[in-house]
Length: 169
Image (cartoon, rainbow, N blue to C red; front, side, top):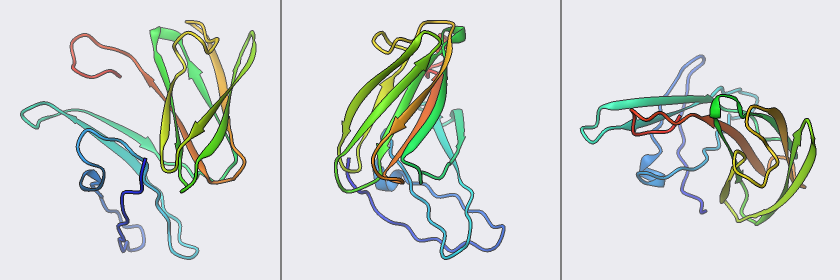
């Protein structure tokens, strides 16, 4: 990964703004946006991703609320019921390579996996695939651990494939 740029926005009290980052990261790409309020001001952010058909009509919109990545240990859950795919995206928010440990906890035990994430890069971990010890029709939790608070961001995505749409959710 690489640093894509900075955009400064002035936002009034209880105001809102929509920022399209496509011009920074390019079409069909993904990335992480870091939002910082000035001084003691607080900011609430949501991510909206739009999936369009060839005619530019919006087919599907997904929304996720942001979270503050100021911890060295980030926890979340997975759910393999309903034949759902569970992806974990882990992103390095810093300018140096980071080593992280993924711990997956299931009813039958825990497993650890080590990853190296390049500067401003990320990995997508397919928790639903063989090798992570997660069976269908189970629930559990994961932890992503690194040595510096605020250096990484992790978020889980659950998706279900639908045959009649061109996207997986």
